[in-house]
Image (cartoon, rainbow, N blue to C red):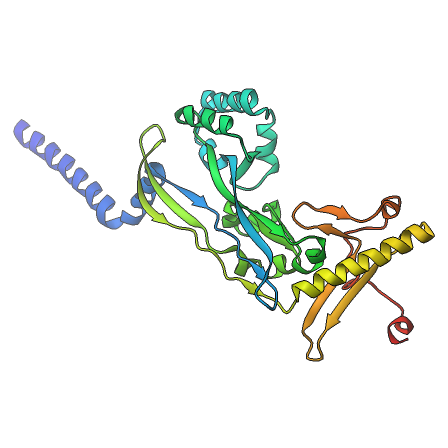
Length: 315
């Protein structure tokens, strides 16, 4: 009888083990696979090079160049314990003179937080020497947007890092370095920004990468060809700027203007407004008279948004 009870208990244990094996490998395979994947792997995303905006002759009026930054990856930093995070904070404070990492984590909604732009050789070497203790910090090759001056501010617009509302709308946008915020950069952002690159790593129990399991390189978007003529745009802007500046200094009050050149078929050859701004830095391009009138904005697109009496346009 005792032997029968022991055999029955062994049978129950074996049945329980067999049931769980079937449950893991057949019934709930996808669930357990997803959990295993979550705890043993992680993804690193890379932002692609943003595509060019071209004039009607194929000349670049907005383009990107490679740049090197020291960045903090929020997704990796969040995996550290309290002591490890403090070590990273102290390193950044002592060597890179940044003391407000916690504020940056709350304020910036991108996965990559730029700690230092264009670091020198000394900064890069120091970071590389301590890389194994600074999980989340990285020397990152990224791209920066450039434009051919304020003449193209109201045509191309400008880019900036993803904002909170962008990330809430689409969480994948947090991994892009730049998104279009105004002008053609905004309206054609999905075409210009391209597709993210992705690297899937296998982690050891301490959360450090062991090897690459899967890798997808970032894909550049498509160039945007416009009807703008670069030479005419630059010439028109210089002429308008000279005229408005001379009238401003002559009358000692701000003078603004706009130019729109169109073909009869509706193609816009030139569109600009003055005062303007530099789209890669958002610094104003105006004169001392305009500066003395704070309400006279250099960010106001007079060519598109300016309202003028009908008689003035028909005169």
